[in-house]
Image (cartoon, rainbow, N blue to C red):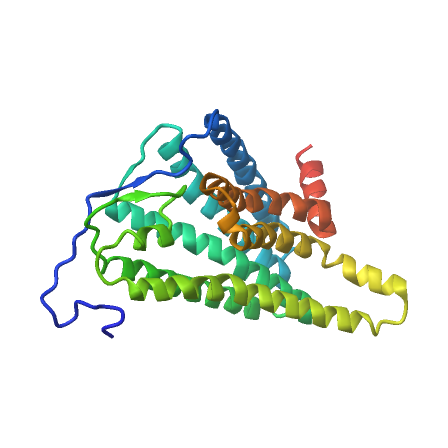
Length: 306
């Protein structure tokens, strides 16, 4: 218990600053054009994910387990981008870099929760591809368990930050209230936060990716036993949309973390910010273009309106 609360049973007070200062993306010429670009990315993301959610709600044919997960992915993308991009634009475009302590931790919680749920939604979709089940209630339970797990883990990370004292700098060199940047500013024992910072990538990034890779290895093994090449290609096409989402989400993150020491801090921040906002914009476009059921449903909706 003392690991999570070092002040337990001791007369210790914590030094908490009135605010943090978001100091990323400094010294880049014409950076305001990048913020305007992020604004348009956000608008497309909101429209695309709203359309996908509306189509799934209105079309009763899209009530399979797969589309339960697709709906949740669209919801997380919409919610996550709405939590991140407007605040990011307010901070940098309108130069409101001072963010109150409690607001910063709340900002961190919602950003980390939504970014983590994206990877677990991809796990849910890969699970559906793996076993091709037809039990919607099970998919609901799976997604609900992911939400509970992610919220629990992120709450622990945020809770441990409240046990830190900040005596000197309050500058956060990132584009949002980043956990790693915040706990490194502490002037008391930060080992619990360091431990959770090492665990977060494993629990919220590597574990989902390993499961997805395992599921597709198994799918490839199963397809190798299919009689004809035509049947293999037809079966593989059902996975192309999901594989596209996996590549868009994981590849930029892996490249950024693998080469972080060789990338300029501003370049790293831009890469991570694009990784945060681009998948939510591209996910609905990919599913509309590559999923026959959604394309047919969208066509029907427009015909009915006409």
